[in-house]
Each structure stands twice: as structure tokens, then as C-alpha cells.
Length: 408
Image 1 (cartoon, rainbow, N blue to C red):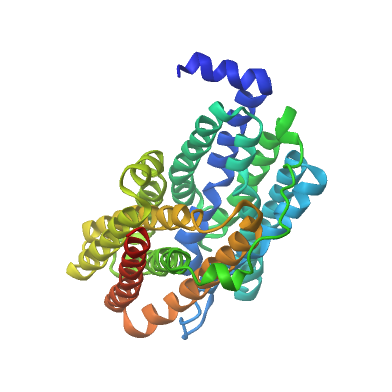
Image 2: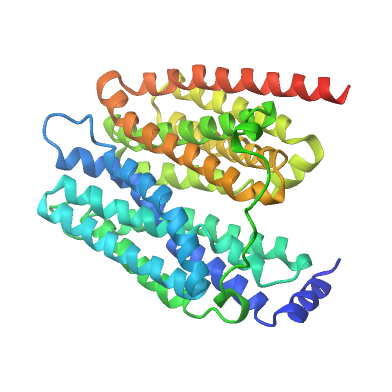
């Protein structure tokens, strides 16, 4: 199907579909830069604000991840009531407030207030995660994949905008570091507010309600080996990504590479997280979700090996790139596998359970990252990856064996 045919199909269903997809891609680039800023500076700022005990340094990043988890359901419910456009605008207002609170916390030398501010920023990002669904909703079936790709391209732009914002703004309030970057989060959300306010047509409406009544009990669904391994590998890949990524900027600065190189390392990492998304779906369709998950786990093994091989800047950056690609293949592959284990009427409870398990584990991983790094060092961050990957790999083997037996 040609691009002209796709555009015609989109226009036939909603004349605003193409325009809305471009607007949401721009919003993803702007608002999506906030996580990179938080990940780069959250732990470093925690160390700056804390006293001698640095074990809680990554709590601000954990608070951000917790905010994403806590905001997922309220964001969906709010948009069902007031529509996508006003829901997205509400999310940006929360993000603006969070950035202002976080920046003020640094100026006040208040660690606890910083944690609250970044919790609100995470809550706002839960709204931004809905952009790809809104882009797909307003177009025809033929246009949806293209619309989602546009939003993903916005995420790649965010991977550059976030770290560059850190480099340009972290010393705005010199000699107090980092406060400028947190205030910059508010500026980004302000720009995002203006961007999402331009949405028209179907993207302004609440998503269609899907019945969640009926279906099997969650306990019965969970007894499927493929369901169990999908949730397990999603938890493992996402938690390991958060665990290593949260500690990496602290380790790079501790090894003398400086905040700018730490920011650039996170930039390459986030690019590696989202860049493969354009082909991951095709790879899953061709080779199967289990195979792609296995490749993702192998990439995570490579990340650990490179991380243990040295502390040069190249070691950190290569490890972070492998971490990003491994997360992409492992998590998207797990998500695809999960969709094969439930019926349409079971979608709500299964996805809700999965997200609760994944983001709960991510919050714990990012929080424990600071304690492990402070108490044991960077090498142990990498050592801990291997038993987690081994557990996921064992579960994957069991699921594959069960699948072959049922097919035979």
C-alpha cells in the first residue's frame, strides 16, 4: 500500500488523523525528554543533597518510576471522562508543577521535597505514555501503524533533547548545581501543553470503552506457562534496565568522566532503547516472541560483561547501548507474548496485573540500585544481572518446551 493510499484512508475516517499524529509526535519529543533528565540527574542530585549516607541517593529516580506506575490508571480514567486533549493538557500541568517543586527543592537543599517533585513528574509521564494510543485511535486501520511510528520517532528525538537540556541548564544557578535542569522540565511541559492543545478531531475524544466483563479468572490465566514467562521476562528486562541505568551516571561521575559524559551516556542508552522499535515488531512476527526475548536477554548478558571489563568511558557507553537494545527486545517481546495469552474481554485485568508487577519491580530495582552502588560498587551492579537473566532464561526454556508439547 502506497503512502498516498494510507493518507487517503486516514483522511476518509478522520481528516485530522495525520495532523494529530504529527502533533503527538512533537509532544512525545518535548515531554518525553523529562525522563532522560530525571534519570541523568536524579541520583547525582540525591548524592548532592544527602549527607554522609548516600544509600538513598537513587530514591528520587525510584519516586519518579513510582509516579509513572501510580499515574497509569488515573490517566486512563480521566481521559475517559474528559477526552484525550484535555487529559493530556492536565498531565502537562502536573509535570510543570513537579519540575518547579524539584528545582525549588535543590535550591532549598531539601531531599524530601525533591522526591515529591519527581513523583509528580513521573505521574505526568504516565499521561505521555498514552500518546501512541491516541495517535492510532484517530486514523484508519491502515494508518495506525504509521501513526505509532511517528510517535516513536518523537521518543527518539526526546532521547537527544533530554541529555542536551541537562548539559545546557545544569549550571544555571551556579554554584548550586542541577536546579536549572529541573526547572527546565517545567519549561518542556509548558511547551508540551501548547503542543497537545492543538489536537483536533478524534484525538480530542475519550477512547472507546471496551467491555472487561466475563472471561477466565486471573488465577486460571496465570497458570499458563507462556503467561508466567511473559510477566517474568517483562519484569526482569525492565527491572535490570532500571537497576543498571540508575547507577550508571553515579558510576561514570565517580570514575571521573563528569556529568556531561554521563548525560551523553544516557542519551545513547535511550536512543538504543527506542531505536530498534521500528523493526522489533517485524522481527517478532518472523522469528517469534520467545526467540526475540532470548536475544534480548543475551544483549543484557553482554551489557554485564562489558560493564565488568573496565571503567573507561567506552565501557560505560557500550554497556548502556547493549542495555537499551536488550531492554527493547526483552520487554517488547514479553509484551507481544503476553497478548497471546488472554482473550479480548480479559485484556483489562491482565494488562493491569502485568503493569502493576512490572512497574512495582522497577521501583524496587531503581531504589535498591543506589544502596548496592554505595555499599558494594559498580561491579556488583553488573554481577547481579546474571542470576536474574538466568532465572528468566530458565522460565523461557520451560515455556518453549510446554509450547512444543502442546503442539505435538
